[in-house]
Amino acid sequence: MSARRERTTTRTVTRTAGLAAMVVGALVLTGCASGIQPRDDRDVDYSLRAHLSGTLDVMGFGLGDDVAKVRDRDARHALGKGVRVSMAEGALDTQTFLSAVAAGDPPDLVYASRDDIGSLATQGALLPLDRCLAGSGTDTSQFRASAVAQVSHGGHVYGVPEFNQLQIAMASTDLLRRAGLTMADVNGSDWKAMRAANEAMTRTSGGRLDVMGVDAKLPDFFWLWTLANGTRPISEDGRTARLDDPAVVEALRYATSLTAPEGGFGRVKSVRDAADLFGEDNPFASGALGAQPMDNWYVNVLEDVSPDVRLQFDAFRDRQGQPIAFAGGSAWAVPVNARDPQLACRYAVTMTGVDAWLDAARARIRAGSATHKQFTGLLTANREADARIEQMALDQATAQGRSDDDQWVQAVRAIYTANDRAVSAPANPAAAEFAKAWQDGVNSVLNGQATPEAAMTRAQQVAQQALDDAWAEEGRR
Image (cartoon, rainbow, N blue to C red; front, side, top):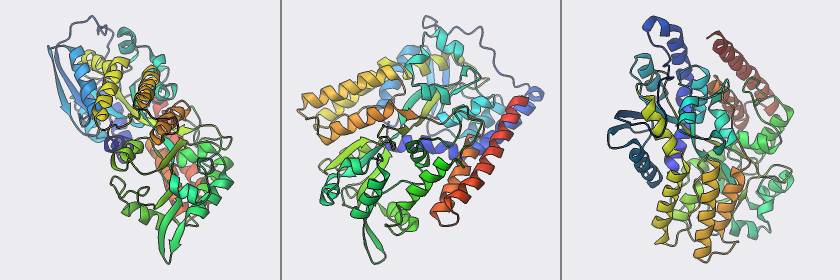
């Protein structure tokens, strides 16, 4: 999966889910009057023996990279020659999707952030996939439990999980060594050591930030810092906000404090905005960044554009030294009144099956072998596929003569270690509103407008009210 498509998928919930919630509410309230009703799929034959024909309409997916193309090829083969696939490429626009549902003309299959799918499921906009998964012989236990939880509600599964995106610790070997530091000083396990490392590596001149010692990656990685401090900003059932939890406030205070030696968040943001993140002059290559937690896809970017820059990788760790990550990702779902859930089911389970993932991994390994590029894996949300693909990456490293301390082998091990300990946000009908509440709170602290305590007290009130209202509305349907 390309870095840009992963980031686009992750951003979808914050851009459209709030409006989506209002549209779904209108859909549910007017469904009886307009004749739109959830489809009864009891008579649909989901077995792999069933003959398929017709047209599958897909919304929200694109064939922008090799991993997508290989799996799409496998899925079309599973559908058979009698099926045509019509694909509206590009990230799912939730408003457009829900308008199509309300008009009685939805796609057969949608691809979106698991946050969107979990939210839409709790609001009744998606078809439960229990019969699809059982009929096709798909064992849901093969998927990451946290990924399934994101797309489940009321004992039913509403999405087939695909991909995990999470964070690992990354650092410049040269800057660490120059300051007499090791990766253990910046992987999150020792906050006192990390603060000292930040101060040791940071370089300013006048009003300019020349070297950012440690980038805490706020506001984006707020969840990661709370997890590192042994807590979560929302309960596991998605009903109770915990933004004013003292451990959440402490995590925010600490992560924000890392910007102080760098001249404050305004200066940090200016440096970030000007950085050539995807080019040869990226912050690590230019010597402008010491360490940061960062999304796993950035390893591929660095290997492509800066293969000779000396780097170190590790799982980001909590204060007890245990690996931790906050995972998001995508999933496939079927609208409540899709015309052909049979085709949608076959395509979705094939795309997320072990065989398709292995085919994609083999293709990527072949493509990179000509330039001696290390394959750094694929995080699939499928546990069996993940285990086999990790071994493929390590086998390739051995075949290429790479040692265990090779930086790209380090990256592979860090990514898969983090993957096994990743936590995801729970499904809830106010996912967008909850995210906006904590984002507003974190930004007010970063911008010097509020203390962590005051910001999270306010965010707690806003978030809990949104959760209470949304769950009450869900209970009335």
